[in-house]
Image (cartoon, rainbow over all chains, first blue to last red; front, side, top):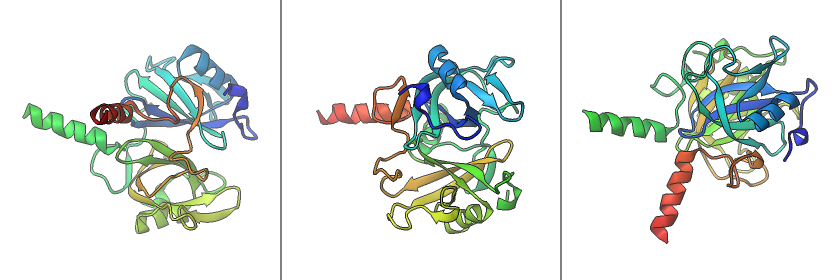
Length: 129
Length: 129
């Protein structure tokens, strides 16, 4: 499907979930307009729309922490997409790897991580101990 | 952090990314108000707010496909959360495992999946062949 086939809202935006394509970690949540989706699909780097600044935004433009986008998938009603990425460096403006580090329920680690990644980390730690 | 500490928008909502806690697959994207977040955190089952119906909504109430929520993480600006879940059955109303099956760029499979899961699938297929 083409960028024009997405269901943009009244502000011309879709929601973007940025996910590490290797580990499955959700790195950040953002928004994109049709131009940003098209720029992402043609350049292979993550482009967005900043709602706070009302301006287009390429992740890493100033920080260098670009997102290499390998796949883009829309959901069933086409108002949200997943960017499957190889991230360069941390993805959060705070310097954290991911933006989802505020624990609200359950968990013990410093951020939201699927179990396969935790298992890998645990096995690696055991192998190195 | 408590449900009241999230940064709800003008409509009283935060965005919710529902992620399979084992595989890392992003299953769906939805919204929740403070009551839904609180109900999720106290019951351990995924609650939401339906923007189209203007009503609270518990996933699986009619379908039985409930989401067992083990962790809830908010992002740096607290206007989005990840529910890390064990899903019962498919998560999409279409019957698909995940809502993110509309391919827009890259990929070959039927839906957005992190590589670790694909690798596991490939190894399993090889072992069974």
